[in-house]
Image 1: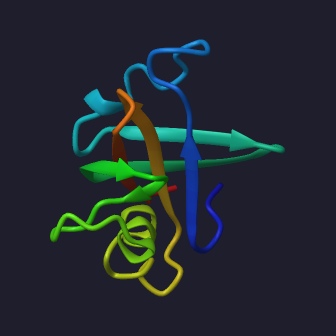
Image 2: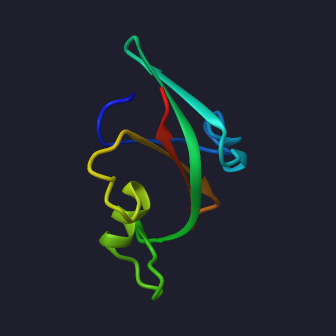
Length: 107
C-alpha cells in the first residue's frame, strides 16, 4: 500500500464471504485504508466505472472484448499517471459485469 503504481484488489461481492459487498456504494471522496505487512495507506475515491466482461476481457466502446480495454479499466486511461500511487477495487455484478472503484493516495 502507498507504493508507486496501481494497487489492484479484487474480491467477491455476493459470495465467498461477500468481502466487497459495500464497494459499489463507495461515494466519491470516501476514504479507504489498506494495511498489509505493517504498512498502511489511505486513498480517496475519485471515480468508478461499470464494465462488461466477455471471455475474461473488458468490452470496449465498440463492443469488442480487448486486452487494451481490460488494461485501461485497471490502471485508468492515463496509464497510471507516471506511477502515481493509486488503488482500484474490483468486484463482480453478476457474471458479466464488474465495478471498478478508483482512488488516489492521500496519506
